[in-house]
Length: 364
Image (cartoon, rainbow, N blue to C red; front, top):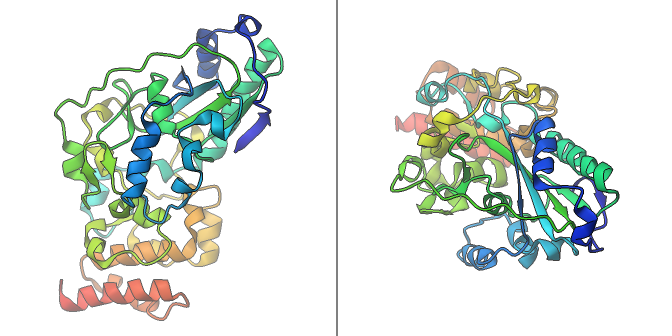
């Protein structure tokens, strides 16, 4: 849960909110820096059935939290009793950064997902959502609400799509014709009976570029992702050893993956972020694998303070880079970097380092 909360347990009659409109909420959201704000109801027909089927197939891998809360994820009023409406908000994050294609084409460089090049977005989004909730309260008086940003069992894309902020693309991300998919989402669960917005029509058509571009074949069918094969899952969510069969496909991606977004035609309209928090920090768009692999734990903690990357910890950071170094061209610098951590204290790091050295010894 993010931000301040008010109890969502009392119903409010429509007459009590006649001083507020969806247009005013959108206006206030725009003034707070959101690119778009929409409203949905809380009855998500078919959402639980789809999620249950996905979980039953084990597509969530080790993300047990996806199943832990049961139907609460698909039924907002079960998560927060009294919820009648959900306000969804969107904020663009595409940074001014080195060309992604150029980084991916140079196997000596480290690729970090575009969303993680700046500061962690969670606090920014929660603070702005809280400000929006408080602005509504200033207009109508106390009401029930809770603010979320990737912080609870909330179906963010589903809610945003139903609120008219875009449609779910075949890669499962939210897409908008005017903004692509490079944006963060957040929600306000509220007991206000607000009029819902109409969903927009999908515009993927017959395009399958995202599916074809996925390095590991994680988009197993349109609109369905097998997280166990997704590079974002493997480099961020997975705590243990990365499956050997998938390591070569990871290439030089050390934190997340954007390939499905990079090829999406709608992202030619993606807006550059204007928020300073989302600007590139620590030169992460131009670092080499060798220099990042040399970071001590203290350097990792200091340089990535305030970054989303910091939550994976130094051990997984080294694990990911070891795999990327195994995929890099053989050179004295790469071999020396790997050899320096051959006997690392972490068994997880040692295993991936020795795999990478073995790849270079075999000459692929």
